[in-house]
Image: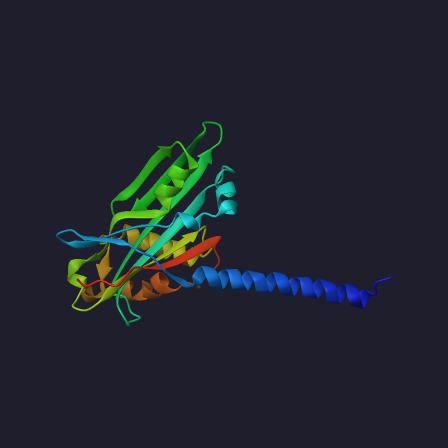
Length: 217
């Protein structure tokens, strides 16, 4: 017969394994991944294209079909290589859910251009709408000085931090919400820098931290 002490030790061991596995998974998610971005230049901005469909794993895809809203929050920061402080910030949010009775997916995007809502036929197409940037203005060209730079994308699925959500929304809805750089001098800009670069603000279902190849202005 197993003693009470032995049972308690067994339960503690299981909890230790679970907590360790969770910590390892969170650390793996927050680790920076090098990814090839497509970088272009308009007359005024650096345009970024990159896909991160892997934000939706098998479990996330099952949850997507449940009929509940799923939110993707994307924070973009551009930095000079070797420097911690970004020279430009940008953001985008996307909500997606399956309309069970009508058999389509509803996708709502909010970025510097405003809010848009679409009906999408398949899960793959809906995920592609939320988990990708397509010629997205990450930084004004005036923010990019000489030297090497890279773009970082922090994409979170269903973040739980209300502070993060509120500040990102406020950023997007500000008059210059597309992208802004430090040279423009804004107290609000300074107050949200940590929000845009911090990968440990709170919990989320999944997170990807991507870094582009180095490039020159």
